[in-house]
Image (cartoon, rainbow, N blue to C red; front, side, top):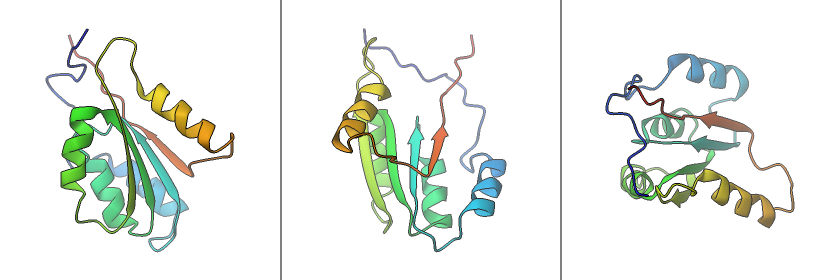
Length: 124
């Protein structure tokens, strides 16, 4: 089953959630290297802001293939190390498969210093 799981109206604008950035800047220095994971990147605006605020960060971005492909273009000019993990919109496909594969390659070692779960809420 191929269905667009994103809602027709997204409640957060391109600037993201300011509270998230305030928290991150209270924990990480602007020049610090850390591993950031975002599950559900939509149009990659939050990831873009993380790239701007933390140019030495490594990003791991998980979403549907079409959003990942658009993010690759949007984030192409950033010097951050960025890894992309795409999934289909089939019913039993999810970020979990990409994440599980990544965890297996690391033998269960911690992967991320910060995880942002940016799951969209479907408004009916």
